[in-house]
Amino acid sequence: MKHLLLLGGLLSSLLFLPTIICADQTAAAAVAGDAKRGAALFSGSLPFAKGAAPCGACHALTNRGVNGGKMAGDLGDLFTPDGADVIKDAIVAIEAPAMKKMYTAHPLSDQEYADLTAFARQPLPEHQPAPGRSLPLIGLGAAGLFLIGFALYKRRIS
Image (cartoon, helix red, strand yellow):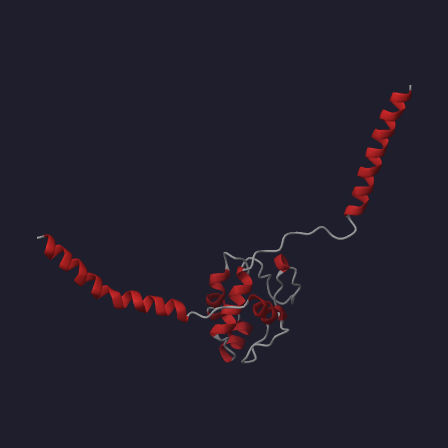
């Protein structure tokens, strides 16, 4: 009985082996994206291969500091690590007449979608204070420490 179970297990594993191999090949065939190329494609500094308009011509991306066009909405909610997987679906299924016409006539390649997705998956930049704004705070802190030190020194002399 044990031999039959062992033989059955071996046969069933051999039946599913082609499925496992195909799944690995499909995953390996997925296009790897380049975040720098994705940023360049978004801004328009690198043109799309088939002549589509860059995203930044109409859209802004304020969560990444990209001031784009004002014709359409901000894509900050889409270009996040969580929203990256829906970029291709959003472009393909778009109902806005201008975008539908543009991206039907000039579709993006799988590599371009992968690059935009890689750009979107990058961690969002941390908010940096504007240069020069911290200097007055440092000055006030130093002046406060000086006054406390001076008061303690005066108390010691008296």
